[in-house]
Length: 341
Image (tube, rainbow, N blue to C red):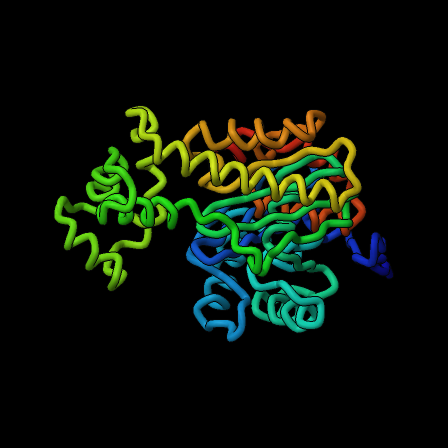
């Protein structure tokens, strides 16, 4: 008569059993989209999925929870594993902002996804972006996409979100583009190519139609998010208003980086520029940010993210399970990761 022996190992409070897959789930949820991935300890990305928005801002919508649950299920199915086989899961979600609410939000995520609470970890979405963005223990990130997120850390596991309530009002370059176009339309700014480019971007040549669209918000949201596309052609035509917009935004983002570095006590660190606007916007924007940062902090390293925020959430889960995150990030399946950008 034989008996089955079950060996369980406790690491950083996470119980790891032989039945587990040695894989980690990462989830990134925001106001415009959500993404999930499953990352194995050898750096292989087993699955990557995306869906609509997921936030935990009060009141939490049923749609957000349904999307969260469905995306986790689809990601596990793509990887061919059961959720219970995951070593741990990390969730970076917009709306995880207050320590006194975090435990309830943590419980809600775990129950919605059918995951054990003691093998899941939650964080603000800016913190998830930082985990995916940098290999370095001293690092920060400014991420500008459909919204603004920023975070910094002095060491792995010591991440701090920066103005994640947006009380300081980040520079919304999309809004500034449209505002500048209307100021030009009313004669409050000189007429430059950016006005015609904005009108064509929204599919009209009639100023009154553009006014009505802006007033009633009768426009496609994705079209509005892509209004930054007008900057590159405007800059190529020598539009000084477009250049002014880009330089002013770059100076603001550079100031945010300087503020975070000051909170870190100065010294050598890595600054990551992420999000669709900074990664896919006009090249002048990133160049100007680097120029203004390095005027006062010449030793600061400016770079693109190593991986997406959902990968970062998985890496954070791995860290909390006792894994060497630098080795994990260094061995990432970059062919699979870069394919998703």
